[in-house]
Length: 280
Image (cartoon, rainbow, N blue to C red; front, top):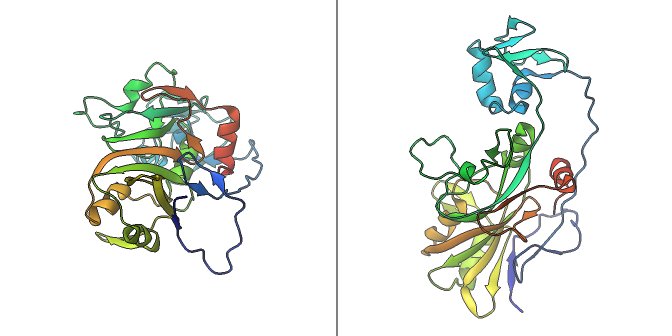
């Protein structure tokens, strides 16, 4: 049986539950639990949130639109950041009526050579090309996978959920299957979970193990950190070259029964688990 290395638990930390199988052979991880407070749909919401939920842009970009005077509420220009609106208010962007459109959640098994930066005008292929016929709503990738990384990628027009899944304060598990140019030593695996200096960042993995008993050049690594290209940077800092990088798990979602380059809509149960942060 292969040895798996875990980050040491903090003192006085409560147990998180029984180990669960997480999509990579010889890798087991704990289940996280969370609760969501009931919402009152008659309460006012921030204007930037309303705009983001309409699918126009992110909250940060919505603030810029508000400051620029492009947003009207009930016929009046609103430039005050932090302004709130009621569900019955009429909100327009450059005269176009905005509404809390139907939320769409798409899971894609991203292939190589497609980028997730949808605003790159020079990109030959983006992940949006793969889902362009999926729905009428405009969806965006949640987080990034670089051009050469494959695997689980969520796309949605739900700005609030996107914020939760990309903000550092929210804990979400990511597991990668890493193919390297040489066997990974046990000493380096221990260093990775204990923490190493990568450029200006001190980073740690939550767990790491060999994927195949007879092939030490393949490892499964679990992380929660969201730094850019962090898995590649970790191994490159230790003298390894990544031949292939595949994300097999993201916030409770896997690519099971989803061929490379294909997509599917999330089930209502999967959406509920994401919103309640009750994923494993």
